[in-house]
Image 1 (cartoon, rainbow, N blue to C red):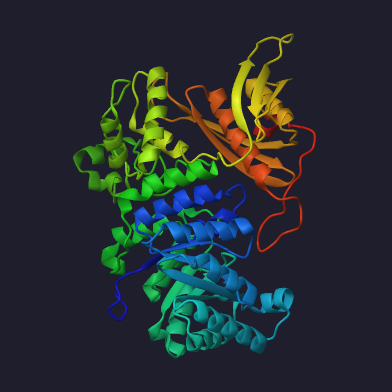
Image 2 (cartoon, rainbow, N blue to C red):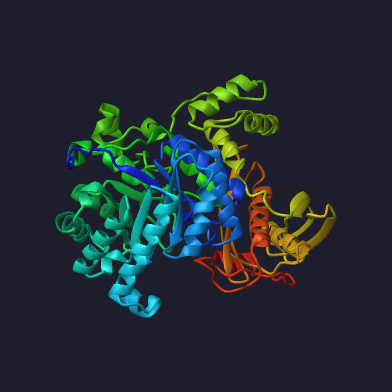
Length: 537
């Protein structure tokens, strides 16, 4: 299904921009930089590093990613106004390859209720934005926000105007996740037939998953002639999320016979990238998640197992190794050296610096002293844990918890936290259980009011000494945060997860309303916790 001989689909990753806008998925500059390196190793063509005008931290993140990477094109989003475009251009200045991505809404509902503009005014603003962006950068992408709900003839008119102004990529976003594959196909085909000069540019699709069709709609766009897909690792993003990078890439690879196109993605790095992002944002990947979920290659039904034993292709259309899931039985222990660990990390698809490898080896030895055997899953958890949120003022110095059984006994916890000033704060609390008491004590120590939304724990590997992975979601001043921790002691893992949440919350600005697509901040108030039992209900 090659279109005009073009069989390459550009993978535009917006994990660091649109993905980060989902509740609880904020990242520090250091975490964005680490994730950007992972995306570069994965073979992503374009990395949208942020919305430079949204905040000083977003500007810094775009600038640091632009400075650090020389492989993929680094992109910043900007509204069609001079200030946004100038800030984005400054942030992108260090990049070896750069792209300015400008947008304006085009649908009737957005024109009337958000912009207060006529059709003519929208076209004029779009052309001005693209023309100004071209003064800073030759690679300019234009997005018609809410394109799917825009009148087809007006959408074609807008696209013709921005192509004439110098846009090299035109994006058709399904901003609210409203479209269907057939409709997306018709829109792309309509633009290809009606827009003068469209053969000179790349058509892109950016689909949200509100109706669960983001990947299907993106694939329909490709089949109709789009040659860029905008997506995120694990499908994270606003509301129900975006098109999942790993799913669309593996669909194009597995069904190359149908689509006739390819990407530059090293699919063996998909699983490590998924795990690393989950660690950074403090969120589990659902077990039934396509491509990278734990059950994606699991077979329990007897008839399936029988078929798999006879020929794996009876029930597996992909090999787990193709996406970076290894079934090795190699086990490391406390006598294993740096070389063995480094080689295993490389085979698992992770790319670490010498400093990161040294830090990992220290953590590995500490874990090996507590576990008889260290499995691949343990190593993955250790590597992912290096991405943990340490970008805040609080460090956990010690904790002690007690459990109990009987009406006269109450679970308790005592903690010591070290603040940014180096002072140690000690607090204690009682609760419904040791974790409940622990979270209340940590909240008191940091003068934080919180509501525990959810808590999930699971075993990372096998055996009675397996590491436990904890994921917590908590709401602080109306903003939801996620945190993740891994330890052989599940209570300690919960403490690590909650520490991530406290550090994330501490970095948010004071409430000032929503700015450039960002949530309002929070302030600190006396501790109040919703009981753990209630949160679990």
